[in-house]
Length: 258
Image 1 (tube, rainbow, N blue to C red):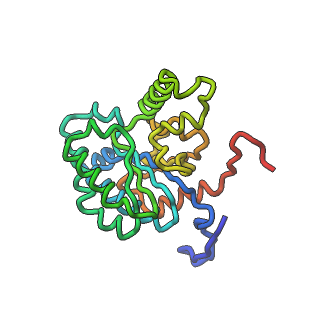
Image 2: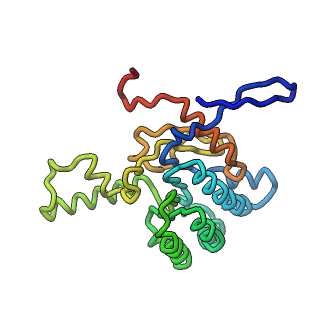
């Protein structure tokens, strides 16, 4: 654990943990929770929380890139979120349009490439166009990958992968005994992330402690950090604190520590 020293209010010198730049998790995934509660606490409509949350996405994207993160996956809209009130869903579908219209130049400036996982064919045409445009415009960037989960569900992803593998068996392109973890992984939506397909650190904001159908296969050995902040209040310092907690843990992957 790295530390820096600073004076507290009493004038005493105390150690403060800082991020070890050599051990930053390559893939961080965030379940961005609490936009609605943030708005309710301020007697604002829920969409005000989503609007503020979009600004947080911009700040955390840049912060993660500067910290050396390779992939930042953000759970933006789940397959279950369609159950929300129609007005809220319609607003959420407009957010990617507004986000990419204003933020793509900054993404390119910071060499960030956009990818998306989820069934985007179910999204409104304008949303699909904005997503495709951002992917195309940032395709030459080779820095951090900003991976959005849009209309994504972990169970849906696994079902789709199993269907694809089953079709290969049916077409005599694959034998049943050849099916292993790598074959399944090849048909998951995170396969596009290559060696960084599995998140090392998963953060959930707003104090909730559940995975909400997110990356059910990939999180097998992820470290979880649950943060009390609602997503609009999440800052670069919050991100650093989560990474510091991650760096203080010992990942054994089912084995024993030396």
